[in-house]
Picture 1: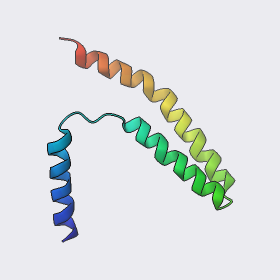
Picture 2 (picture 1 turned 60 degrees about the vertical axis):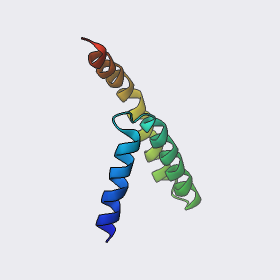
Picture 3 (picture 1 turned 60 degrees about the horizontal axis):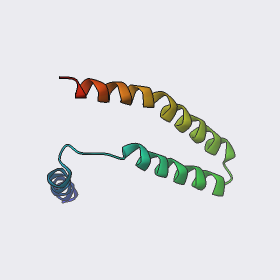
Length: 76
């Protein structure tokens, strides 16, 4: 039953959004900030620092890749 529902939800999502999925990096930043908050609340500062460093690294290195891919998709 759960598989059936998830299939219907993904079909509905695909029909609403199509190929225009934007803001995934913003959503990832919000989720990672939440994870850092949970780690700090649990007293696991090493995990909070690790997540923070990991996410800053990802956002720093993925931005040039995203610009390159966007430029390639705009080219005729």
